Structures are given as structure tokens and as C-alpha cells.
Amino acid sequence: MWQLFAHRQFDMLLGSLQMDGSRRPGAIDKFRLDTQSIVEVVAEDTETKGHFEDAVKLYDLAQVSSSL
Image (cartoon, rainbow, N blue to C red; front, top):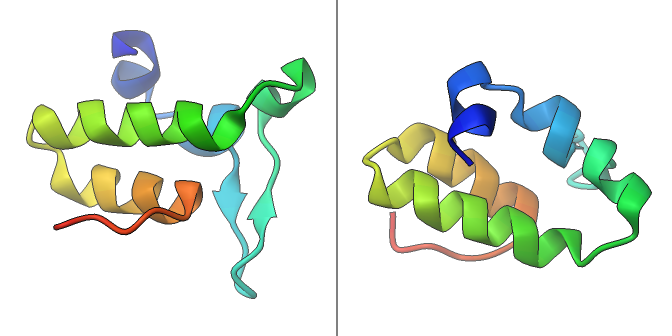
């Protein structure tokens, strides 16, 4: 996860939120994995490291409520 955070390429890799609240797929979606769970794990890791603004964006992307 360090590589993902170091390069700050969340949108390209994990997807992004559109203005209407829908999620635009990222590169990870090509693997047909449980992307919501993966994004949630990255969000939790990002929060643990103290990068709260990025964590909030990732929680939004994973459509998960956080305590932030």
C-alpha cells in the first residue's frame, strides 16, 4: 500500500467519485475483485497513518461511514 500512497494515484488505481455520487471504476476493477473491500482496507491504513483527508476520500469511495 505504500506505493499507492507514495504516488497518490488513488483515482487512477482505485476509482473516483463522480459529482452524482457514483463511482468511476479504476484499474483495480479490471481484476473483478471485491473493490469496495480493498478500498476500505486502504482507507483504514491511510487513516492509521494519520492522513485523514485522504482517508475520508477513500472511505467515501468505498461508501463506508468513518469516525473522521
